Length: 176
Image (cartoon, rainbow, N blue to C red; front, side, top):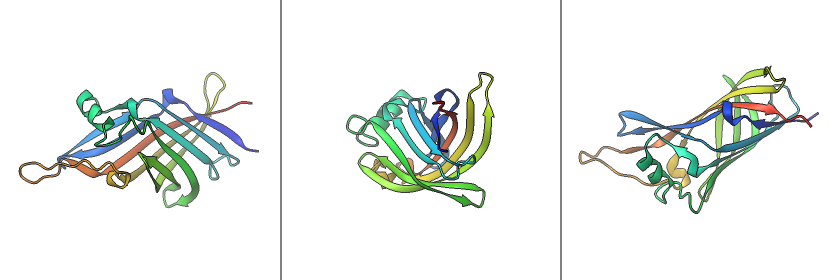
């Protein structure tokens, strides 16, 4: 029997990390997102997952940088207000599961893979069934037309092309 789940945004974080000047890491997150999952298996090994994040909810702790990320140099939030992910499969990996799917940023859709650590299920104090996951992966921002680039006077790179994704997700079972 298929079980449906929805993300619990109060207990989930969708973050990214990017090297700045190749000597430090800037962390950002999305404050507004939705996700759903459907699965017949208790371990989610056959889950179908969809996710969407509101680009205007991006937060790196610096308003000027957030504005730059929302501009056409990066996400172009005005024309492309969301990023979307739709799973295409789940397989067993060496350290858990590997979730494969199509990630759309701006007008580019590419297949990506995320490592998934399934942390189990639990019933919360209110009787709600919850499932916990940690998803990690790496993408190249330039693959998605996030092409802004600058160098320092000494020739150093300002923003890395590699973006680390870290998603700590709690899903809530939908009771029909």
